Image 1 (cartoon, one colour):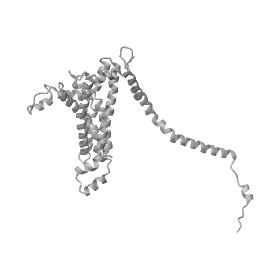
Image 2: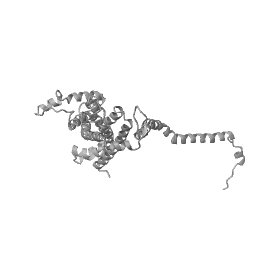
Image 3: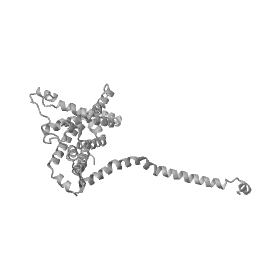
Image 4: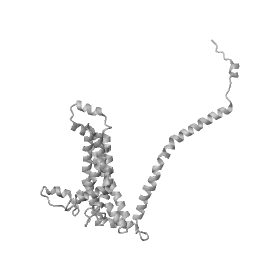
Length: 327
């Protein structure tokens, strides 16, 4: 068998114009260029506004504060380079360390019960109960309340002579407590303000995470005879570990920068009581910068607070990882 090819028909077959070939090649090159641009450049353009805003309102103030901390800078005077002089003075300042102790103490008293209560509250709201929507919305009411209003109400509750807390304690034979005059009592009063305001917020976060856990895991555990308590410890808690780490980070940052509650508890003053018994680091910074007009010294305290937050976050992260049993 021989293969015969009609060369005349092949030669007479219509050929596309040369210009159309160039246009098709140019179109393919243009489309491939746009495809590469869309994959490699467009994502950076979409996220660039965040980084631009972060640079303008995050990195620049941070760098400027560090530069100011190296100066003997007064709001009403000129800046004079001081090197590490402010840091050396601050490390020997008893008022600053008193503020650090107050901040860490209030943070521990407020954060640990807050997260535990939020976890238990979220577990209760995750069950089938009547009026689920009502209770879930109710836990967010303290969050939408003004912090000033919360502080004013709690200040009245902790009043020495006519406060409701002392009135209730009187039934147990406990004499009136001057909550603002002692370190431990003022810490407890401020911690309850923080817990009342933020427990519901963390509970809603935990609840949202719990609802993403597959129900099949609980059903299988129930068939194996696991009690609800065992299911919580063996299924719910390990799967919530990333969310718990997030809430610990946020609570650490918020707790170590505590400002509004203790300020309102002291009637708008920055001293934190007559002897500074509940003055926080944030209050110390504002007092130095806008009461004593030592702008450079206040910037130094702000940087030390930044270091304190980093240390607190690292410690809490390591503790949560160990509790979660991670490797």
